[in-house]
Length: 79
Image (tube, rainbow, N blue to C red; front, side, top):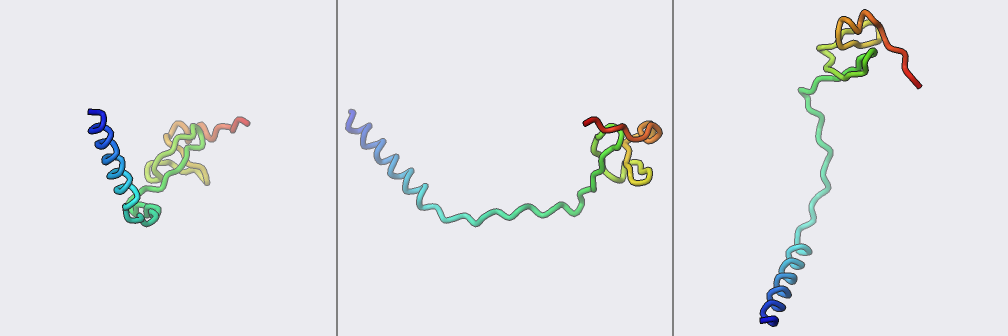
């Protein structure tokens, strides 16, 4: 019985090694092209949340997520 198990394991390992080393080389993956339908994202100057540019409010060079944050202005950055 031990001999049968030994030969079965040996045959399985040989088959596994043959399949593993006999695979064709895969070409390296190219980075995915950016989605042409993706919206540019901007960061709220007050709270830091990111949102699509078409939903953001702009004041000069700053972007805001809501009218309230636009009125409050940018929050000073903590260091």
